Image (cartoon, rainbow, N blue to C red):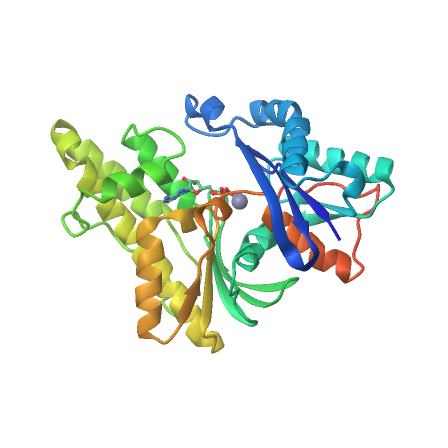
Length: 331
Ligand code: KG4
Ligand code: ZN
């Protein structure tokens, strides 16, 4: 079975092909970062328009890279939500139309389930059950994952997502959008212990997060140190990053221990963070917990992860119909 995956939930137009047993044949991601950069965040209307321009070339490229044509595709998996409705509609309508014209099954997939399943595109994936720490620009949560299609939410952010906090702090420091990668990079030359930002654990025995406090603390620090900001940039970035990572790692490991899981999957755009990858691995190892993290190209939004979830849904007989629509919020 060859499955075409399509993802357009935010500012990446992506298509991928997976083959029987979820082998990745191709994955193409066209990023719109350049367009949104100057606005300091994603402009939904511009995102939708760019998806319309990009969807056909991106799908064509993914098929060419897999050495296939549309007539070799047996089914389509497409992101249904959560995300920007206008952006989602481009991929969703495209998938619907293709499936109708080709007379093949198709299935709408939850974007977050996609991120969680991204670890299955790597060799030696985790066995069930495991705990997933999902950290992206739109979501931050901890899940108890018992199968490809079932993940129980154990806790989530009450305000900003971790990636959103990175993007906002980068904006305060004039580092551009998206800011996660830049903060990661400049933190390497900073001292994470020099400026102590607050860690918000909320109830330590629960798994919810809050990142608005640290964002405000960084803002206040910047306002009070305007004159020497340039020299302090690496220390501010490193101090902020360390505070966020301390909380993420603490809660993910506690969650795994609470569920008796020996495996954690770290997924989502922020899983690309070098400090988080290193810290979660070493903190978890001390508790006898093994951490699975996808390669960098599978951390950010991509269609391969959507195709993997689609594969399992289709195998279980779950398909979508013409009446189905996208959704903006998590369900
Ligand atoms: O999963 P993703 O591509 O899109 C959403 O579903 O939201 O995540 C994008 C987020 C952005 O907030 C971006 O700043 C963050 O991931 N990000 C990072 C890094 N690379 C991307 N955050 C921290 N460190 C990184 N290296
Ligand atoms: Zn995402």
